[in-house]
Length: 235
Image (cartoon, helix red, strand yellow):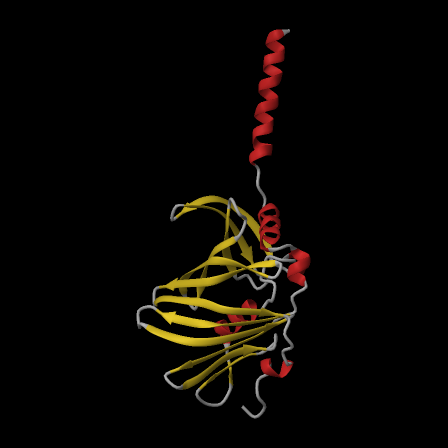
């Protein structure tokens, strides 16, 4: 009887280990949403305005920038470089830009990338409703950090890997192929703004160099006119 009891205990423990260590993409995503402030708090934000600067590290250049976002998928970024006005924007259906002249539509892969980035909540919140599939890849140690790797595939087939801090749950990094280049984006310097946490530093690295976005001010729920995101007529 003792032997059978020991065997039973061993079997129970063996079965319990996978249950304890098992992890799913939904587990990671749910923890991230909670860490950022919770779905209700995130959904209560309807607009976002960010003011800061972009540093092009290799060029030693700092570019002032202002970014606007509005639900569900409107986005606009304004920059000024060497006296030239630069705008990238989308109303959710057309991506367009101004580079010192008339506005013009952003074509092809670059335009598609901007439309994906305009998702106000990001791709992993309500991912099923957006036609996005997710896959839990596993836990990885990257630059001394323990991160969960979750692969997202958009409905057009475009893949991106998101990495979440194992301890805090916060989004820390993403990797993707952008315009044919392997690109790594690192989010850090999380700060509390109202009920949520937001990354105030975003570092992007690809073969062309390093770009750092530093947020100086982040404001939620200001009135933003839809016209700001619409491509000017006659362009």
